[in-house]
Length: 265
Image (cartoon, rainbow, N blue to C red; front, side, top):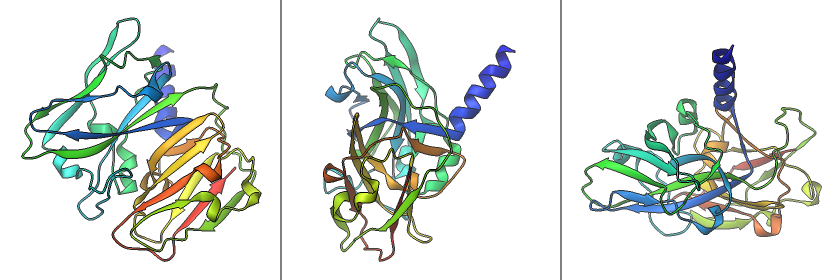
């Protein structure tokens, strides 16, 4: 019976991950530096739920939401091995050298199929928790680290849909920060958003969704992870978005003309 319960829990995690708050950490890895710090103020005193890395594929290069530089190629990450080392506030090193090979998102959303999530569900000692890597690099690379965390009790996960609204993204240049309130109308005010989907025909949409909401922030989630429905679904914990303080950050070298965003509530 215990084995059956454990297997069922893993299956639920594989199918659906609920995002309440998300911290985005830009990390620069140098050949001589073997650690990435997780010490970020927004994570202090928060229950940490999960950890992901984000890179880009050779055909879909994307720039950082923060700086005018490209993030690491997935092929570059194959030259090194990345591991999480996590210690909680009680001094327990409960994860040591756990491989992050299957926790890497990239600019091709189909890669979500290989994701395996492990539940942390603890307050971390951020001064002693880190990501390490082994191997050699010819030069420094930059990648994004995403940390899921919780500030409120989760709403029950349900696939019930009360309604949805689709808007065209007003993209005019390759690098552009678009405030959501510039194109989202009043129909979504106060709505608890469960899912956000992006559509750009057959090509991945290269950008980030930066959301301020009632109970926190979802920082610069790559929209390639929200572009197609897949066995690894990312849903939102009924977030009530502050559209005046939320942005779509386009980071493509081209300017697609028919990109759309759908809010499901």
